[in-house]
Image (cartoon, rainbow, N blue to C red; front, side, top):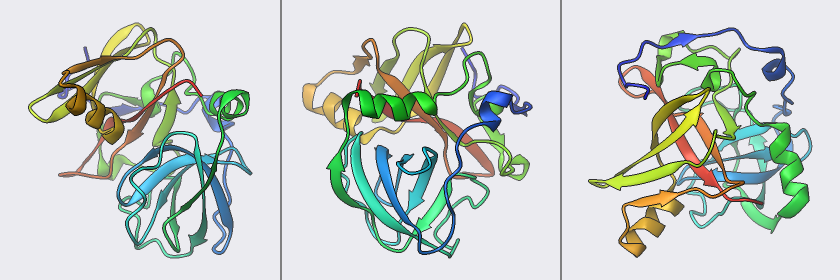
Length: 225
């Protein structure tokens, strides 16, 4: 299992990662995002035009009831003041909070997901270890990816916090899990454990810097679309 003290090392980006789609960053551009995860001040999703993963930050609270595969729209702001980590290549500021305009599931959603799957056999987010010093971060490396774990993932809730245990490259990996939807489900059921089912994936991302480091977290357990 990866220890939180494991030394973090950036590894070269593979051709598969280099070929991932890129979104527009022109201020005033309209975005329609297939939601993958959401929080109070930002959401992550796939740009329906470019197919790129976007981490969208808003100046006001976002609808916390957004679910994976909802579709939202928003407009890119030219300012970077909202971005807690401007070195995230996927990060974008929005003029207003994104608004829900629909939902995509089934084969269409699956096509978008498969296009951004993390290359198998490569270190998660091109980093060996669970975290990386903020000063080592560059825009040449991804900070978010859809991950298809090797077998089921297990989410455990203890003392008010959650972790997600899964296998990657043949090794057990345990990361903090910040999926509010899963946390609410565990609290409501009184359980302390949730196992993923076949076809579910994980959204793994680098959290904004905390005490000089950016830590890998599981932002969302993605159900089958």
